[in-house]
Length: 160
Image 1 (cartoon, rainbow, N blue to C red):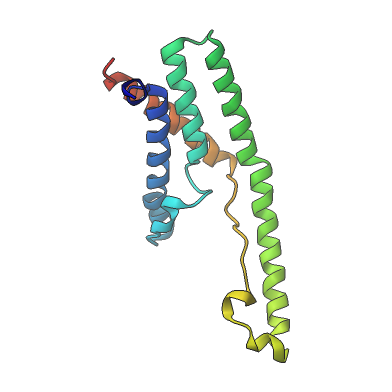
Image 2: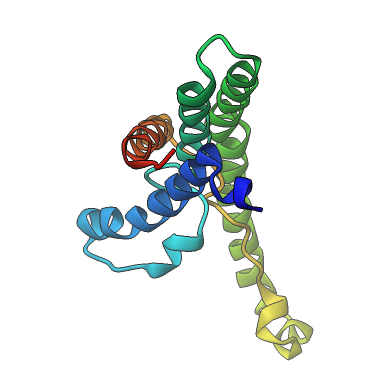
């Protein structure tokens, strides 16, 4: 158990996730003047916590085992796949969710005229899909940079 508590790559990655999720709130506030604490637990947004996590993990592993280790290679490939997926498949799923939510809204408006529809509870009338699934490339870039910086700073202070 003590070994796990001293696992620098694990703690660097967890710290990067928490920092990236928390920093979304003030960044959004600066951009929109709206304070939205739900961003702390949401997906998407600036910076990407997924990217921060995998780059912090990869950087910490590189610092511990070196750039020529197999563990670093596995972690680097994992990071690349995760970051590519954040801007690719997950982003496209978010775009599709926007279109589907619009279709549902239009369909709901049409159905409001039907007598049966009026008798249903509100939660059954409309279910929105999560639209912030993926990231813009700039969000992934800053998430990645966040993870690297956090791992380097933590490494400086980490007690070995």
